[in-house]
Length: 203
Length: 148
Image 1 (cartoon, rainbow over the protein chains, first blue to last red):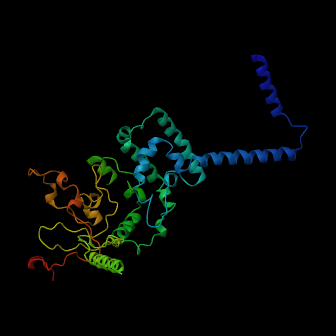
Image 2: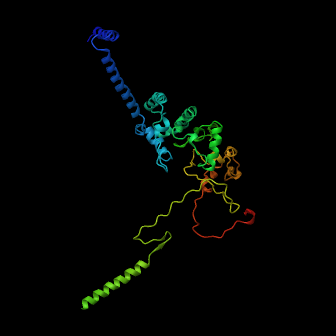
Image 3: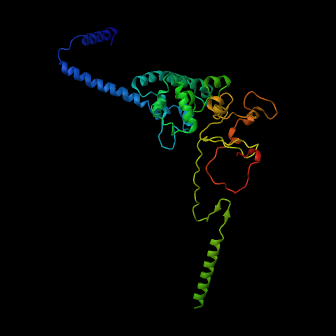
């Protein structure tokens, strides 16, 4: 195929798309569009959901060997009542728009996967504080939105809580604090912190 | 007839031996438990919930932890206890602050943060479960420590 005929085909297709269709009824065109829309939208969401579960997350050895092993020791993995929060429950928003934004941000993670930024435990350890700070900052920015999917302070019965948690929760919330301000390192190990970082993070 | 007699004798002897053996069970430190029976599983003790600081029984006693510390991490990277009990945070958290002695290393130098030998809190400080004492004792604190 010469370049000329190729350009011709593109031109003709474009003209076809720009002119009114004379052979199909408006109803059939609309129905075709409707069905195509369902297939496209459904497929898009299915694909997005396929990347939104633990199996997908730990298919990367970076996640499986480091953060997943740590998480397995914590209360969000195993507890008295058998409720489990998996990776996306805390790290991906539930609402569609926020979820979509987070998925776009994840392309940066793919980029670093290709670069091999954290492909050994040593490299991961060296970056742990920086990575943790990113998560803490985004949690703080959203008022710990993903925590609040399950833990809402308005649903808390302070009478049922122990002395310490009851007092500190009420104090914290009335001072406008959010979950992540105190609850750091609950599902993964904390990074090594020097005095300055201790002061900065309040830990 | 003789054969039957001897068989009866052997059988009864064996029975007596068997019953004697079953009486002479081995008693180990884990308690009296015959080998052919399953041991009783001791009930899981529950950690006590938060309460007021527990009084010491003797002067040098490391204070007992009056709350649960399940899943608290104390490792090279972080020390969960110190998030409340350090001198920086004890006022805000309302916790007891760690003693000044914890800043002294083994050579007698006063450090600006917790000395490595005092860093691992649970080596001395322990939480409590609601369990009867294994061995009865009549220990009472000295008068100066007794609270009226």
